[in-house]
Every structure is written in C-alpha cells, then in structure tokens.
Length: 105
Image (cartoon, rainbow, N blue to C red; front, top):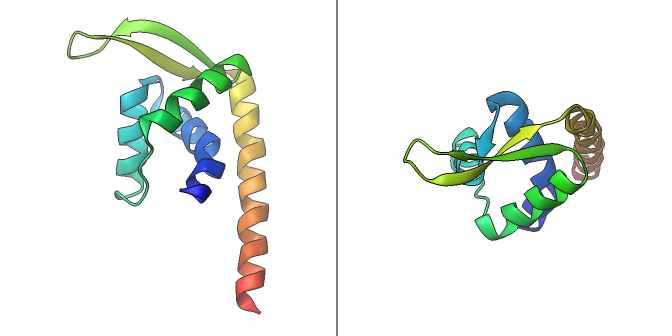
C-alpha cells in the first residue's frame, strides 16, 4: 500500500493518457485490470488524489452521465497533466534503477 500511495499520481495520469476520459470507478477498474489484479486502488485514496490533481491543473473534470444513467465526475488529462506524467515517469525510472542497483549488491 505504501508503494501504491507513492505511485498513485503516476498510475492515474498514465491511465487517463492511455484510456482517455474516465470517472473514478472506471479509473480504479482500469488500473486493476491493467495490472492483472496486482494493484487495487481504494476509492478513499483515489478521490482525494483526483481532487488534488484537479487543483494542480493536471486534470479537468466535468459532471456527465455514466452508461448506467448515473451522474459522475469524469476526469481528463490536461497539457500540464501530460507534462507532469513525463516528470512522474522520469522519477519512477530513477527510483526503479536505484532499487535495482541496491538489490544487485
């Protein structure tokens, strides 16, 4: 869970980049499916993160109707969000290289 918390921004931004506009529940499901059920994002963690990313200008959100006829907030990546995704990927690459080096010793 701690590692997932640290990578939640990266996972959300990447999912929106690859899947397009999604509402929160679909984001959770998309991350879970893409990870072959290895990662599960709890909605209690997701929604505060989405709110923060929206405030930071990385996402835009609009209220729309879902396929099931319910109102939900749909999130889309902004240009600033795409730039942040690149920074998050670079940070992830540095982290995984560093961990790999430590594990190799």
